[in-house]
Amino acid sequence: MRALLARDLRLAVRAGGGFGLGLAFFLIVVVLVPFGVGPETAILARIAPGILWVAALLAALLSLDRIFALDHEDGSLPLLATAPLPLEMLALAKALAHWITTGLPLVVAAPLLGVLLHLPGEAMPWLLVSLAIGTPALSLIGTFGAALTVGLRRGGLLLSLIVLPLYVPILIFGAEAARRGAEGLPAATPLMLLAGIGLGCAALLPFATAAALRVTLR
Amino acid sequence: MPVLTGVSFRLSQGQGLVLRGANGIGKTTLLRTIAGLQPQLSGQIAGAGERAGYASHADGIKPALTVAETLRFWADLYRTELPDDVFELFDLENLRDRPAGTLSAGQGRRLGLSRLAVIGREVLLLDEPTVSLDAFSVKRFAAFLRDRHLARGGIAVIATHIDLGLDLPVLDLTPHRAALEAQGGSDEAFL
Image (cartoon, one colour):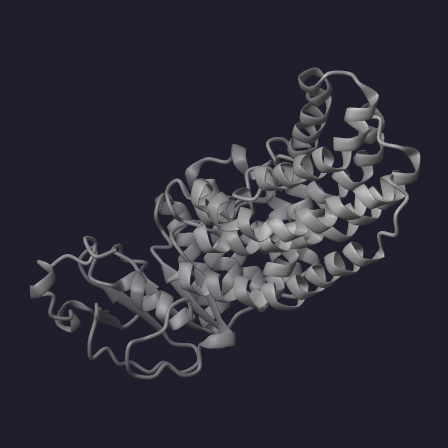
């Protein structure tokens, strides 16, 4: 599993790998919002947690179809599937690689970009924690969706349609935790629900992804 | 939907088998089924599974990785040691540090095939292994199969149209073709 993870990370940072694509998208959205909404501090601070979470979600969505599509196109997927690595571990490695190349940079960049949106200082740790808990679940769900749609023409659209509804609870609880943090309210409940979703995804989705891959590999 | 029926063979250590048959008859399907990528509709496959190494007609080469990195990855994934002579065996010595994306079709094919020497599997399932190889490389690959793989007790099932010069038994799949009259005789349309 470590070999596959190392390969995917290496591919992502090399030319044409798409590392930074999600981060760039995240940055652009967050920078554009003040232009669209206007520079009033009060309004920006109020919508900042939601904007940051929606942008993070869409940035994660952007690179989902690459998770298995490239391996499918060049024929690596059947070769990987016949390797000693169980498909469940393959799914987990793929999700982890996606999170490290997309989710982790967003978590790190979010507080910096929060400044652009006048996010109050006391909300920063909550935003950071909610993104750190929520983005792995985004990658796990996305990997499942990518496994379902790999090999389909125009699978990207179908992938978004499958994955976005599943992202909604994460968005709700993630943004809620950051919002409560910004207003100085206790944010433990949404964070715990978010962590519950994340753990559930980590426990179940590698198996679902492996099952989907078995069907698409036929 | 059945593609082939009544196919049966048994191979012991050191034996190879060449699959023959017209395009679309089901050579790839048979190899993928033995490799465990798709379930058989009926019948039994014994002894392959975890011992099988599958090579499709796509090489699964990542353009951004170098030749040495590609082979190192497969060795790590299969938890085997990278044999020292693998580069020599497949004439890749001068290409070690070249990104795989810059290789020619034949060189890429040699890299794809050299994976088979790295993964250390006993049962090799080879789907058109000689496509885009020149005559010299075909000979080299045949020598690898004979002297390295079969001579050490390995098993190989090879779907190919050309003669590898290995003097292996041939299984012609034409008589095993499943009746397709309802589908107009083409499995492509169904897929």
